[in-house]
Image (cartoon, rainbow over all chains, first blue to last red; front, side, top):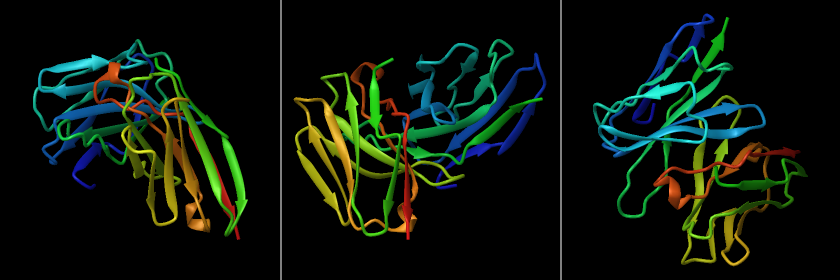
Length: 114
Length: 113
């Protein structure tokens, strides 16, 4: 998937469960990002990481957690504290030097609460 | 978060017409202004971007213009084709968010033949 892979493509979660969405890139990009997409809301930033072992909250971080133990991987955990998790989740990566800020997106994970 | 507004939210044009989408932002320190296209069921793709030292940039049928004083930038598509139908997002770089892009809510463009 163009160097950045999200899995699974579809995910179903029961009430009260935590689930983890995977995002892996082989582009040697320094920065990685998680966005949530809802109809009519655009893409809203959840978390981002510009370097290994460091990450920052975005606009809607509540109920989510991340880790960045490896440059290639940036998994997102949707916790039971996220009250409305049903959405399309997009992961992206970019380099941070040379003023090239363009993103490469993964193909997304659609999460549904059942 | 930072305020990013896109207008219009929907736009319908006839094939061959031009389309213009405007994006306003609040961070005067922003210095990178991209536009993304998302076709139905697919991931967003970067289609054009501009940096703050340039006023206009063209790539075939698409162009982006920037007015830093007024804090807005616009996407221009000429000679529209049905395959231009998609959702378009502006995503200015907000310096307080490092390299993270803040996306507008999107404009749904429909091109009818």
